[in-house]
Length: 482
Length: 83
Image (cartoon, rainbow over all chains, first blue to last red; front, side, top):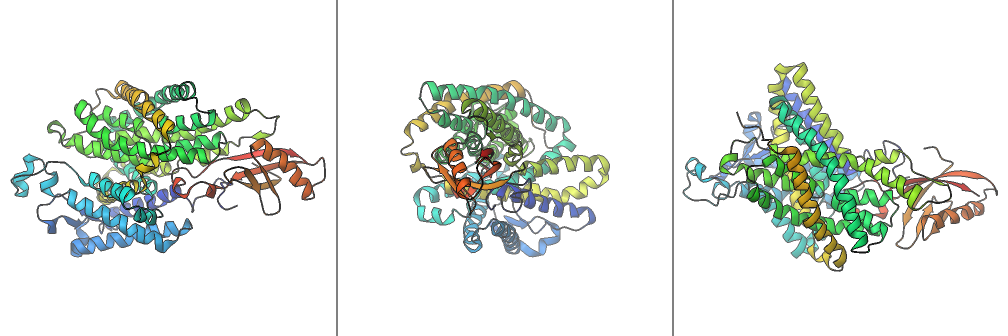
């Protein structure tokens, strides 16, 4: 039955979630080839901070230096276009339309990446001399913000283009693939700063557990008592705002057998608010708690809904905090890792949470004379598969470092391209795509739900998330560049 | 989960629909759907008194395309039906 998850392997070739794993592990394997002296990933374009644009784009590997900036740009486009095109084809999409949309999104992402790395835009004053400039905006890595701005302009002001791009605007696919690559980063941190990786993993799990137990019941009571929402609407909204956004809303709606219109409408709300959170929170946290980078990262993971928006917010926070005078030695990606780690735990638990809800709903709330069963396989079908890729990369690198420590350095030569420029590029594509699918005008007509969401977010989720993050992460600091 | 019959479930905005090409049942709620299913099975030639375990897998194409990237599964359910 097409479109139905029947067997444990259903969707392995037809769902974005699985394709994130395949694309993730494919590049991870190519990166590993560097142990045998083969650079299979060095063609990937890399953007460095520049004052002379001809030096802004370079191939990631020395073996591909001959490609130059244009060759590297072209190789990057072709390889990723082919990979995503194959995935889109397996998912039954119109490949030509997908590739045209992909080209536009990729083009905007690369343009924003290059512009955002201009020294006059991003370089701190201490580096002006190095780049031969006498003034600059000192915005840090502005590329992420530019991607988002371009995406939002399309999504809100050039709607025919947004409509055309919607087949290729897959923020979740891009970000889940990028999160698999982030598994390399956390694996590397486990080798170089084992304490930090372990601390954010354990603290992240505890914080997630506490947050679940607090957020959901509080929002549910508010939704039912103050806003008189019907039970199904309240439960779906609760999961969306309290857990992990759209995926939680859909999982919960399915678990309680809600009509599909309910998660569809609430998803619109989540996407729009996630965008607001992502724009507001990184700057706000950097301003109010400049000396608590890990707390800020973890709080971001619990507050900002959807993986894409959380990763975006985490990346912006990471760059903002590392731009602070006391943060310039913090390892790039370490604050983002705290943000993603919390989100990963939340994602992992959603299948179990939805299963429990399904049991409560079927056997207690809507009890029917004995026929309906909730298959345990539901937990697996709702499990976010990209997490498998993330954990595989992480644990593989830890095992690799323990078994063949001498090979870590050559392996990292390839893996760093995957977890660096490749991941950055996919993050930026995610931001553009996320902007394209965010249409603020859709808030019209969602008045009561929108008000509840705003109240829940400002007065319940954000403060409790920050307190819980502070409780479990206070005092933890990112590793520093040696 | 083993079943005697597999159906695909969707929702048209008003009614839940379970079908597999040979059999089709619908209802405004899932209990109504289950009740209609017993009649649909009878019409399809199943003899009265037969007990069947029916698997109903949700057709993900029912959800808007853009939301499917966030969650690839809605629900599956199994129902014991007496024709």
